[in-house]
Image (cartoon, rainbow over all chains, first blue to last red; front, top):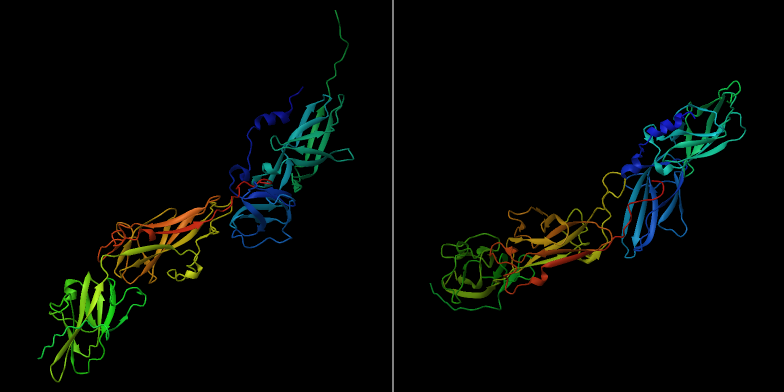
Length: 237
Length: 305
């Protein structure tokens, strides 16, 4: 079988790119707009009450409005909160912990909410020999913005795609570790070269946030070569 | 001149006032070193000569030239006049004497007034015994956290608002992933005050936790660290406020203690130390404030980071 160029690429793709956010704990964490995320800190028996707030300034004085985010308590888990991020911007998720002795601690985490994330095929074309396997995988590139890869926390991604000629969309899952987009339904014909066009319809991150499909890099062409014809009959001595 | 040396230890007509209202414990009969008091036997007439002097002898002999011996200084009530070489402050209508016990006076003294009648030249002499507080110096450390509420006047303390413990101050950069995270610090305040002296004084102390941010004297001035450590405090100040900055910590209470060094905390004029005072008062050399425990919040936020 012809070596799939996708896997050649995979062999060289051993360097795991860590997002700025998750690598060092420094810098704002990224959030894809419309994500709904459950945040949580380790529970502490010394805490009597937890109070969650979202501020829009680093002095932690201006609270975000309901148009910017929605906070929903998590039943039975006061050390957790569900936040639905509704508007682009910089926010500070802030937790107050009031101890049994009445003393309060406070910590905040910065989040950048963006509608900028994109997804695209890394390569727009690939080929293979006809081998009765109608599936393959190819790499995708997902970025939070032009300078930042989408961090691990957003994975797995859910990608909806359609193969030209089909009438229904298909859905695939892309993991952070390999970023391989598994595609099924490729048409193979051992007698004829076939060209399959796979188009990404839509994508979302782990929390339901929308990831924009990058125009011009949303279609991957998969060429399946026919098998060579062997003429004549075998001669057996 | 007719000399009538009738020594009277007058206890009835003597009128004195404590000039420094703050020195409520020092008194004209038992002045603290460094204090100022006035002494008067009343009106001695408009034309009679008044002669004030101080002797260590009950019969008034051998007046002391106070400022020469660095015991005290004598002036009239209005601050005018000075003693002659004989140690006598002389003039007319000096009905009230001001004594600055600002030197190294120690033990018993007799404040004498001799009045010489302008018409007859007859004289009268009266004296009053004064026991200068001797061999004593005490510095007291006490917590005043909560009472220093006037940010523009950090030397003021509202004693009604002092608390013995409290939660840590909400300071520092509490944002985990922006800038340098810090739990911040809490401010604790101690008052160190003196007893038995109104001289210039010096304090040394240690802290159980934290560091000194500033030392403010009663008059509002900020004191700098003296050569060799500690703080020299001008005589006018009965107390200083020591502000201490304590790093906040999670899951632990912090007993913040200021402990005076009894040996090096001294009256800088008499050199009497807190520890050498008779009697010594070591039990009041420690001020304590407790910062209550702040509950831990994990810096690791799970979900979406």
